[in-house]
Image 1 (cartoon, rainbow, N blue to C red):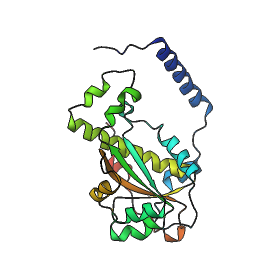
Image 2 (spheres, rainbow, N blue to C red):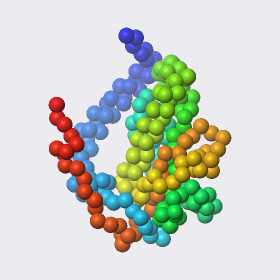
Image 3 (cartoon, helix red, strand yellow):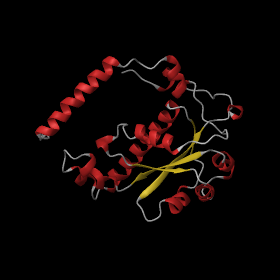
Image 4 (cartoon, rainbow, N blue to C red):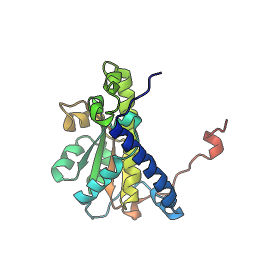
Length: 223
């Protein structure tokens, strides 16, 4: 099996990254119980929104967190359109299922999470230490499709957790016409929509009771 050969500069960067990981683990406390509740255990998906805007600076901050999440071979296939203007919302409305129109249009921002089916063209930048990385995907439609969808979805999950961590509420949904969305927002590209996620400050008067979840023993195995 061949091994990757690193330049002296790359080797220095690797050693620095390893030391940074050690320092982070040693110096950073684990998340508090309250923080875990905020980002997932007690967090809720929202159906209604307060009339409070989300600034561009907050959205940039959000992306700068998301982009650091792990993806296979650092492919980073997700592409995000943050719909927040009236013009953008009118275009998005044409793609929505009727029951989702009001809650999407009332949100300050709704993100279209998509994935680029030509993500591999960026491998020389994103996976530069392996010059053959791009070739692994060329002419391999099945591998491209599974990698783009899986890792784009993963990045969408990072978006949801990161949004809550910086004080936003979320309303993820699949109730829209993907083809209509692709035609409206991604025409002329190789990007395909995956799901939507509204962002803002949720109106707690419009949430419902929490639905059941499986217990560990029902869906997990220890082998």
